[in-house]
Image 1 (cartoon, rainbow, N blue to C red):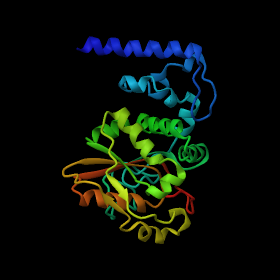
Image 2: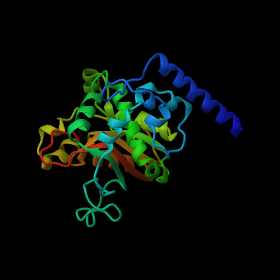
Image 3: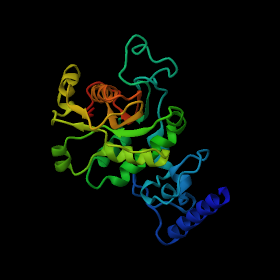
Image 4: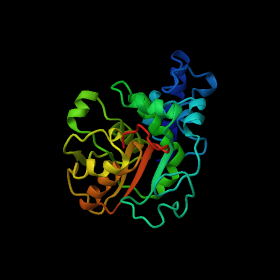
Length: 273
């Protein structure tokens, strides 16, 4: 019943505020204690006009980003909805109008620079769960309407090879995909496998990156008719995303859309994507 859901939501909200009085929350990005005006979890983690998230998201302490970091990390320019480059949104930028992409639409939180670059690098660390959750929250906060309008069936991360994951201890893309799926109320599936340990993309010039990831991924299962949201932390040339999107399509996905936290706009970026 609707009134029961409202009652539960309010109970969670007031419980969160009570805990805040005893343990003032810290922003996972800047690590500063938040003031009393910033302690409502649903206000810090979501935009004021966003629909209510589920109860688990409302009391997710690790995603309570302070308003200052929300503004700093979400500030961005208009971007092409096909490649993410700065430029017009509707029909794609000049480079996309006569070029076929392996995905349909793409959204970006902001440029891979300054504070966002630092946050993405922290999210890659074994202790970066809270930062990854925060970045996933900001991405949904900015692009919730677009993602909801795509009719996504499942959220899939760009996979990390098992050997690299064992050495690094975590996969930022997997963490991001899980957070986005939770906030959007969607399944989170590790539907892709990186079948061989490729060289880091940032070690290679742009023209060699597609070959580096060619044949590097496989699908775990068929995805017949599925509308997939492919998630990664950073995009540079898009070679990795393209390789993953092609495998998803070959496995039967009806379409693939992409969400990335950051896009490396400057040439020669050290981003690995």
